Amino acid sequence: MSENYIKSAFFLVCNKAEVAEKHYVSLYCNHRFYGGPEEGGWYGTDTTLIASQEVDSEAVAVVMQAAAVDLAEKLTQEAEDARNRACAESMEWLEERGLDADFLPEPDGGESFWVATETVRGSFVSTGDRCYS
Image (cartoon, rainbow, N blue to C red; front, side, top):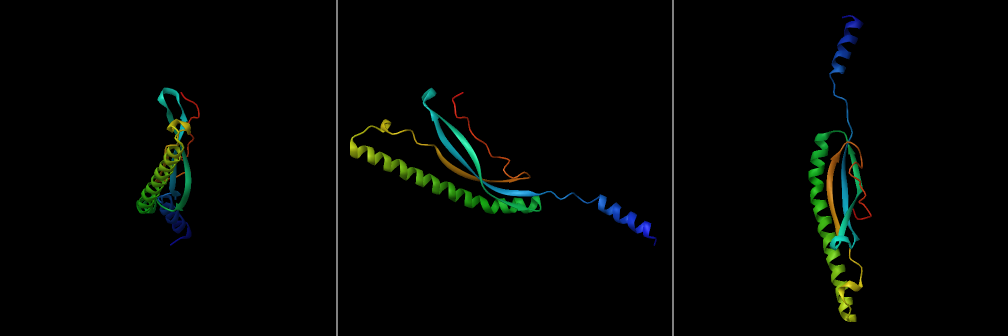
């Protein structure tokens, strides 16, 4: 076989190869914040990237995402429990002093965690509006 034939065959095979694409499995947090009293009160949401793991294929990312969903659900439950405890402690503090609930500012809306696969790390990061619209 000639060297040109071998090279041609090699490049023909390589042209059929798929381009490698990076994938990320990312843990996000949605944090709901109290925006203001307009229209009976409104909330906004900030989404932050907590952690991200780079993987070499979409298939690996999907498997890893499925494994991380349980962690996200557990973190959400823990955050909800902590928020509920803080609200209860605030109410107890108010009751001890004979104050109405509107003495303290509105609490934020809590946090929830979720997992995504993405090709661009942090593509779901967002900041909610800080003014009523």
